[in-house]
Length: 74
Image (cartoon, rainbow, N blue to C red):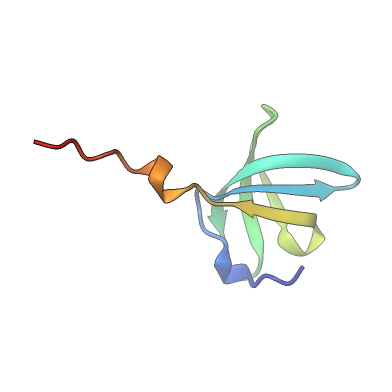
């Protein structure tokens, strides 16, 4: 993994492989030591993970245009 641990923030959605299984989760909390609290999207409970153990890690950021409401002309 080439990303630094400080680049992960709460609310980001990540996709990763762990023990051969592909998972998607929302980052709830990230520490300076590379540990994250993940809310897994498959309905399981939250889990702590070491980022160094996750393979094929991808971070998804929302498009700013989709996150902000459109302005209505007066």
